[in-house]
Length: 298
Picture (cartoon, helix red, strand yellow):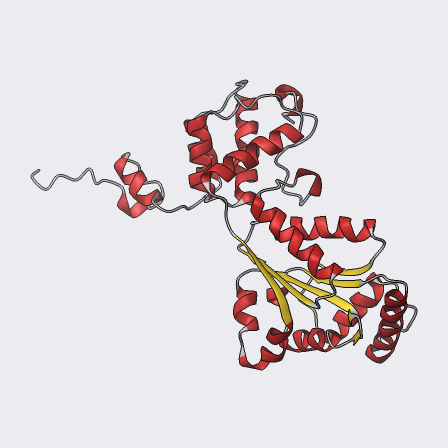
């Protein structure tokens, strides 16, 4: 809606995990390098964790692009709320296995044949599970058993589990200690520091065709970081709404009042919000803290 107004070729702050807009911070470069290294070296199990909105799915999409360029076979499970039967059926569909996809036994035979064939051709095969913190215990055990498939050159199936910090806590459970011992690479995505938030915003604007960044003044950039807490998904949502607000007001730049309006509408919470609201004389976040007009002396 606002692209032409700001001279943009596309939406710079889409919430879709588009690898073309990857901000190559040292953290994200290291995370992607770990994923690619783990796959190429046939390390077996790799775990990627991070809070909601820190860019895990974007990392997985970048990995998918790499795997496609290498003509590697991979299955991507984006819905982790499945039972064991559904789990094997989804693998069979994603890998296009020629078997009865409702039979676990036939899926396993067909999968093993594919993995050996790929290994003999010098290629690897990958299973990627997003939102892995939601996996049932039974499915996690089946995934562990799939990790046992190997030959003398290494694991036949590289398994990447991506999820929220709850995944780490789940893997620490005593009944999953065998799976935990097989995890050879771990990486945790954190929120951005202030300088990274600013560079992230500039990077996305530049990739969307905007020359210069006067639309977000320095004080606005700092406030975006505070209120998003450095979470990329929230940064995108705030910036998108700010551009829309500025467009509606026919303004080529944003300001702190717009930030306040946008983040209030989004119902965002951030450290120090209540204290800041009270100091400024506003109590919008708690109707019971509104100053009383009743005077005890009357």
